[in-house]
Image (cartoon, rainbow, N blue to C red; front, side, top):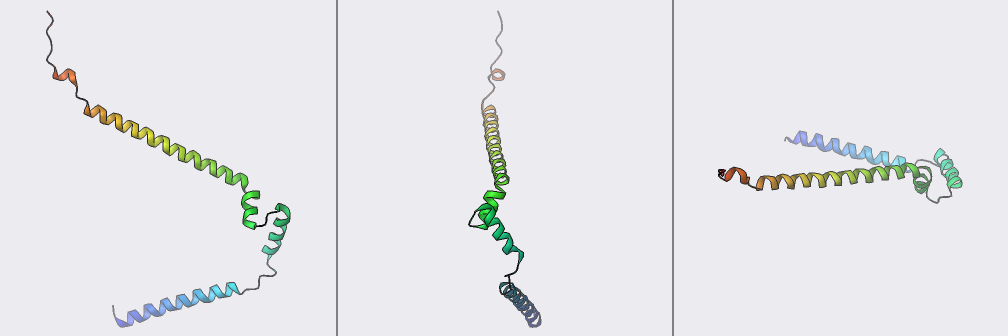
Amino acid sequence: MSKKLERVISLFLTLIIIIIVVNGLSLTYEDKADSPIKEYIIENHEETGAVNLVEAVLLDFRAYDTFGEVIILYIAIAGVIILGKEMRKDKTEDEQDQEEPIEDSKKPKEEKT
């Protein structure tokens, strides 16, 4: 790579880093005293009695949804385990069939007298 290309790339990366830092700092120091989320937190604390907003959402508002997702996850895991056992069982049966010699074809036919 040429020196000019390296300078352009390093300048571009430096500019991107500066933009990211400035945007991050502007989000941090923004006045949030009158934001609607403050009212939402207060209302939900009074309604649910939960100390933590995340806890209020997960345990009070989405409890049934989360419970349903957990049940679906367990059913999926059980299905994978059952299918894995069946496939393993079929595989061992196939291997046993291949290992067992066929006795009838190797024996000479006996004549009936």
